[in-house]
Structure formats: structure tokens, C-alpha cells
Amino acid sequence: MEILQQVQHEEKRIYSPKRVFTEVKERVSILEYAETLTGLRRYGEGSWLGRCPLPSHEDKTPSFVVYEDGQAHCYGCLFHGDVVDLYQAVEGLEKPSHAAGELAVAHGIELGDRTDGWRRWQSEKGQILDAAEEVRKQSFRRRSFRLLVLPYLDGAGADEIKAAWGDYEAGLREYGR
Image (cartoon, one colour):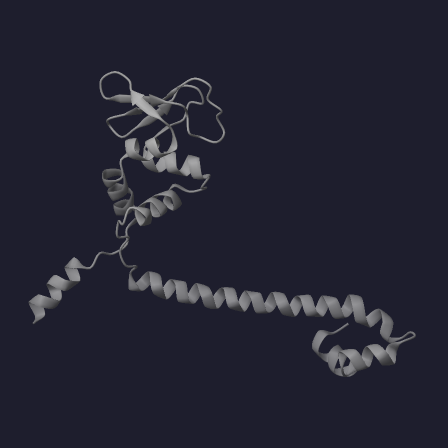
């Protein structure tokens, strides 16, 4: 029984960004991806030529070359990279990890499970963010009370404002002057 549990544990894949990048680059063909973006034609031995698919480059003549080794280069805008770099540039993503993740999901590559330590950190981070949000809300209420309510409480209409905001003394105790 113990051996079976050990084998099952070894089969369970732990999320690793490096592994995801490696698998995406091995299993997602830059040639196939580039062909979905632009028309390519054979260009010499082991390369294909087409117009640059990057949104920032309006290519009038073909200057985008995809090589058999999994790299692409545009001689017009000087883009150079692999399938992850191309996806990132075309989709306008900030981080290569986002591009690798999206490509992995789109091509059915298993990302793996997160570790227990990562899950604990996410839980702690959520609690910290919730506490920070509560402090922000309280600070906003205090400022609003000071700026919008206190200046009018001594003047005309104080009774209406007091009634709308509740007990004036409780407001002062909670929000201060």
C-alpha cells in the first residue's frame, strides 16, 4: 500500500514555470502558430517567409521568417523569439509567463498542481489584502465625515445632517475631528 501511495505521489505533477515553458516550446510549433497569423511560404532550406504578424508592424513586403529550430525573426521590426515570445508580442501580454500559460491551456498541456506552501501563502495573502481593504474603507469614511459632515454640523441644517448620519457624538467618537 505504501509503495502505491509513493508511485501516485510521483505521478502528481507539481506546477513549475520552467517545466511549463519547456513543454510549451517542445509541443507548440511556432510554424503552426505563425501560419494561423499570416500566410507563410517555403523560403530556402528549413525556413518559411511571410508578412510580420505583429500589430505594431504594418509589413508591406514579407520580412518575417520562421526557422525550423523553433525561432522566428522579422527583418523589418527586428522581432526575434520563440513561440512564447511571438504569442506574447501578438497578444500584447506583459509577461512571458502569461503567454506560456495561455498557450499551455490552449494546447492541453497540463500545468500541474501548486504546492501546499504556495496554497498557504495565497491564503495568508488574501487575509492581508482583506485587512488592508478594511483599513482603506475606514480611512475613507473618516475623511468623508471630516470633510462633508463636520463643517456643516455647527451651521444651518445641522439637525437634518445629524439625523441622516446618526448620532453626532458617536460619529465624533468613531471618526474624530
